[in-house]
Image (cartoon, rainbow, N blue to C red; front, side):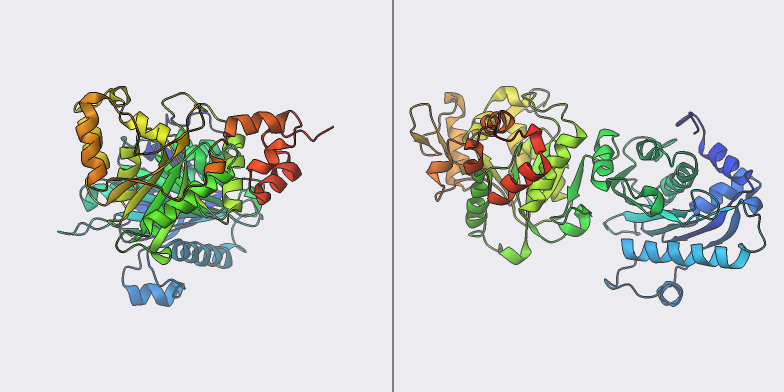
Length: 472
């Protein structure tokens, strides 16, 4: 394996591939020029590596080659997979009998919606490589979804050209370590030019890879700020899942997810549905886990730990977002990238006290006022679930205590509906705490079972999650 993950330039990577006559394939790019192919030709000796390059820009011509995918979209995962498979099969069919048996074939494909002239369109791409890991092997795929942030098409094309070379190079030289593949995808690229918010490893060589775990690594390698998982456990693309949707989210540790968490979500949904334009069919409900807790809770949670939480939330039918956002206004800004519809955030009373704590906004030039300005600018509301105090009395928005100098700000938010009480909470659940439940299940008690949904109890016992010990 190449140890020099980031020391080789894009040209050096392309040249190394070009000079290896065992690696041979095609490059097809639609929607953003032919920057990947150009990098290989500029490097020199490309005839030894590139069988064909193509750019089928015309939609009818493209359909004639790759077919019409079920969703009818051209910049889609289905289309890039069709491109990769078609071109890979062609190169093997045409030269497989005449080239050396030690050849390892590949096809790279990209379908792109780059910056349009005088338009504020979503700039994104699906890119992938289909590659033989060793001669004669069945091919494996690596597919990524990319968002581009440069403000002009030329710069976006250039960034995708670098990404494409990095992806092809990594598929050959780093295939034994998927995390190294991910780390290398932005080699030779300045920060904040692109975001990779989805990656999928497919095929025989990657059969033992957990794609959820590798997508979490996208966050930890600074390729994205958040990744999403659908209820079936597959990786979701936020731009597709949230487009023109209302979003309701709840942040928690969910270690493990309790009946209280479920009631907060369900009662939050009821309150959210009272808003104009919100119904079950146009709303995405998301359980969010932050990797950056200001209080230091779970700050270094392991990959295994995160995956266990995701698994149980998926089991209950929830979408899951893993993010590195600390403050709620950053979470709101993330969702606002993809939808201009209603955003609801379900919180507990402890969170209300936190957002009215001026220390929570250290580092912000405008302090707490800047924080609130970013949290509540448009169609965003907090739905607040009550709590029990030490005496067993219920506390909600009617008797919350905020600092005296902020009480008028609090009244403004309350009277204008930016923060709303959840009225139908189940008081019997208010004394459930995840940390206590976690302690119980690791010491062999049965008491914890009453606090969790039945499906969650069964999964914890069957899979021995969170250090579960059976009762002796």
